[in-house]
Image (tube, rainbow, N blue to C red):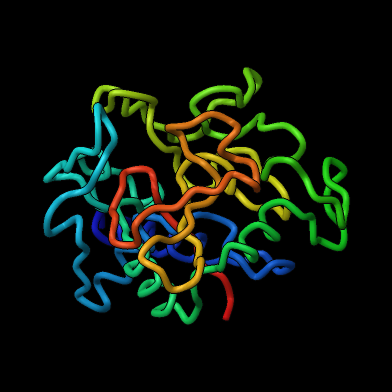
Length: 240
């Protein structure tokens, strides 16, 4: 019975992360551990971090042998948390398996900052471009600082600070304040891969729990080597 309930939970989480915003075509949430587990079960895929460890920044970049998408901080994490320690090409493989693709940088910015819904809630206005993915204020995002003292408790959020030199770690997907286009965590929580040409470095968008509000702005230009698997980089997919 317990196994059946666990499988049902993972399936529901997979469906939740696969649900795309109708206006932009991009997923409402970051791809979760549960969703990535479906991909691995179906394909036998094995990630770089599972082979050689994931990375975190301490006094410099450090490789942690037991850190990977299944256990981002070296311990097993719930299936509704974002899948991190995923390289750019691994993210592309997942999206392709799901019949989607990684968004390019311009698509990500359009979805994250410009309200496209025909009838958005009162806090957003159709056609308006906002400073942050949460609106004109970063309040409500899961960032290190400057994201407001009025943030409601994040359901299911664990404190991973004992494993980190900085910050508290990511929150479960879809549990922070919904932002522009009804999307979750386009600002902070984890950086997200986006396509930027065909080079060896690719765009990472939106900031993360490791940073403050400035990194959430659309003009903050961050990149990482495409083969890098990092504790605060995840991704989401967009319709082909």
